[in-house]
Image (cartoon, rainbow over all chains, first blue to last red; front, side, top):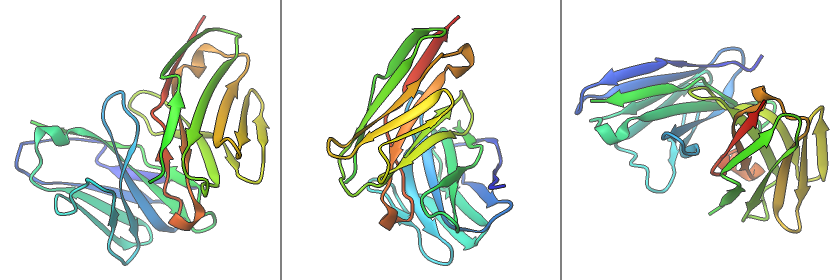
Amino acid sequence: GAVVSQHPSWVICKSGTSVKIECRSLDFQATTMFWYRQFPKQSLMLMATSNEGSKATYEQGVEKDKFLINHASLTLSTLTVTSAHPEDSSFYICSAGGVTSFREQYFGPGTRLTVT
Amino acid sequence: GENVEQHPSTLSVQEGDSAVIKCTYSDSASNYFPWYKQELGKRPQLIIDIRSNVGEKKDQRIAVTLNKTAKHFSLHITETQPEDSAVYFCAASKGNQGGKLIFGQGTELSVKP
């Protein structure tokens, strides 16, 4: 149980284009989903917290107009990187918080974004 | 805001030896402390966690200790094996923030056969 998927697993896009990443909880309902970014050899940095049906809460320094987050249902959250630039190239990982434990999180497999 | 410091950044041990990784946190309201193992290009995997009402927890070769007064917690791996080689992250969260995790900087563990 507690499986989280992400799609795509990797994507290459040109500078200036937008990319959408999907995060799904497959066998449970996630009231809260989190989006992290991880640069090579660095830690996971929380970008934003999204709750189903409400606006995402962004961490300090994360541009909400550039990283659009939508959490339309209890099983799906999307992250759209708008007007991507090479410095946005990173490993993006989502996690979902289950309804049974508000502290435990289940991580998706990550999406490798490369902006050329 | 909450800050989590993790040491060392790299750790090399011989197979069979023990490995210890330490973390300190800044927010005394933190009450959940998980440890994750991450292999290159993969998702973090929860290996053990501890809640603030417990001082120690053990699961086979892995143990975690928590000192709430000093605001630090440690991961202990005994009888290390080459497959333990990975990056390990500690994290902390407060229950009133819906499980938001703040991660330490990570420790790259290398177990030499």
